[in-house]
Length: 404
Ligand code: PMP
Image (cartoon, rainbow, N blue to C red; front, side, top):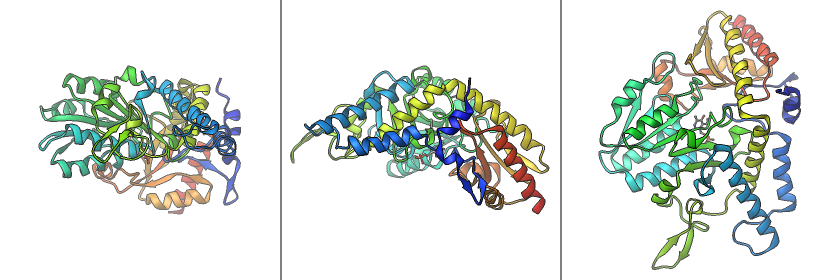
């Protein structure tokens, strides 16, 4: 059973008001709210354990290290990775992709080589590759999509050449909600002996993700989108790949031995973790993953699917409603415009009614160009949203529509 009342009670912020109205938080694609257990775990560690990890001989340092490494194991289990050596802690999805683009680019990309991305990527899965393209004189190739927001698999296949070195594609679009057939796409890449990076920022919070089942070479996500703290994220990489890649940043922790003549690097995963890690953030992330695991990722997926279906049906009854993204398989994100009401006006007026949505290009300007629009209003749902809140959204949009 899905105990929505209990879940809502775990998130203190949900009971606050904005402008004298109950908060209806529908901006989960941007970031999620935090359950009390996550905030408590962070506070408790600061109050009773805090010490720098890995370096200290003293009791607190060892306890903090144990907590930090236990969090790595929690992440490993959550995505079913084979080893904790495959779990690199970063600041988030963006840093994970930059790390990989930089390190993979350094080791494996040469002038004339090609990287495949898709038209629906977030800027954080475009710009790092573009920066690399400038440094390394490589080319970016883009998988197109149809008008429903589904990637064209035939066109994808055609993009491979003997210069293709890596594919990097989003699992679930933060704008269209499209769930890409990532397992099939990985298989196709592997048929061409090309590794695959999955941007799982928008899938990890909403469905079970199993890196072994997907056979993903790399997979990245952010803690703050899965009910964990900001400033912590993950890069998963198959051990055989991570072993072949050079370090990203230099500093403490990532070394084995330093001299002015020659420096050797630490084992995985520490080779990629220069400096003091956010060891309290990782505790918060692990708590968040335990929290959603206890509810059950399959139950969460089913509940959010029902919410999204309900919202789609209700929104479609509004005159002038245009929904962007009608893929056969869709996550809990709905982007829309109503008539010629500017997305910013709609978002601002909904805000006055206590409804938090996102407006703008959602860090996906090339996708906006493909859609021929400047931006959308985006409602994105999480584990604690309800049909009643969707009714409030629909009534709000109807009210705003009447003002124009
Ligand atoms: N990729 C996708 C699909 C996203 O939705 C986001 C966040 N909106 C990111 C990457 C970047 O995540 P972060 O800002 O946490 O690094």
